[in-house]
Length: 507
Image (cartoon, rainbow, N blue to C red; front, side, top):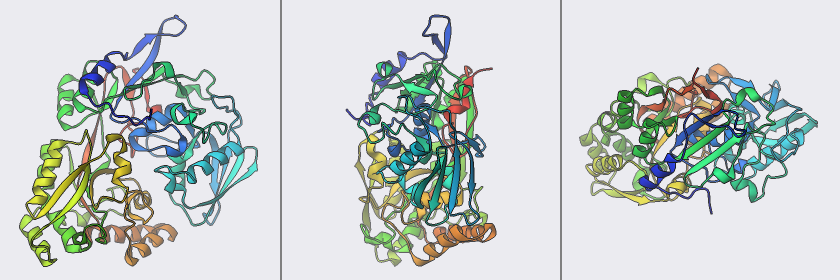
């Protein structure tokens, strides 16, 4: 049985949610109430093997069982976790980390430099979706029992970020690579999986690790993840107190406001279309910049923001976020909604009779959004064929190279992280390995330049991407995360859902 199995019947999910407790439950020793945190999630992990870890919404699951080398504070700063200190060499080609000497994994194995090295090697040589984040790592050397040195082939400006996310998760060296760890995480984290109270496709229950080295991070005796992909069922579970916090959409957020639930809202992602096939490998028309520009003009993003997001967000033409060096204010408004101009551009490119493109769609994809995409692109001669893929495999299918374009919601971190997420030839969301000499040169200047040079190159890259329509961004929606008054929640920069450490019982 795989962890990615989808059970999307809303009634069944709601019934499973009814079995969950919200804020408190009898303690295991019968001495009183135990603090329980129940989170409604729209995803479930496909594997608990650290080298298969996915980020974003998935990180809470992994943070329950695994510690990372570095912990990110809510404001994005770096704090010690399994690594107590770190330092780059003057040329930026080596990172030395000092490790804790008092940590054991849940199977009794000791965390030390050899364990850290084993995990980093396991991650960077595996097949996981984030493995590319350690592509610049040339070797990991054990300096002594509690010190490692990571040698790089090229500078990696985002290495500390990666080591605070999936790449930094540390599992027991005795369990790495086994079948067991895929379904039963073996880490040194604040909680351990309670298999007897876990049902794949419904809920995942974690109980406090009694031997945890940092008890201040254990704000709850038990953490339950209730897998509720259906948005209506998820809102109902939150409103009724069956879960303590969950991400909502524009429609249910309005209901949450009326119900007096507590908003924890920030801007984070851009949403729109990724035009993978910039070289026209699958759909020759997409190899013409005029066609990609036409797609940008064909979408009435203001109307979509109003209709789908209830106006909660800001229009954008850029994949770089406002707080990054790649963002150029003057580019906003480059592609006004103009279907007539879109038609002209398509005709100029030689496709006046139109063409078709395939895009992936999955079970809980917003059908109203799908209808808008099909209608607005269809109005300028582009027939969209939606191909249904399993929800559990949506990301894998999306970036498999079989689709020329897809709808996507991607977060907007630093310029360098965005480059490695969606722009570089090796980026996960550059599924067909698009590149050209201008992009290569600008990426190199961002990577190797000093702070001023890198910032200027990032802005040039942002301009190039907009002018050449590598993407068709629509808007930056508000991240609509809500909780009840039983828990205090601190939002986490660059994450749609907070880190698990950001929750505590209401004061």
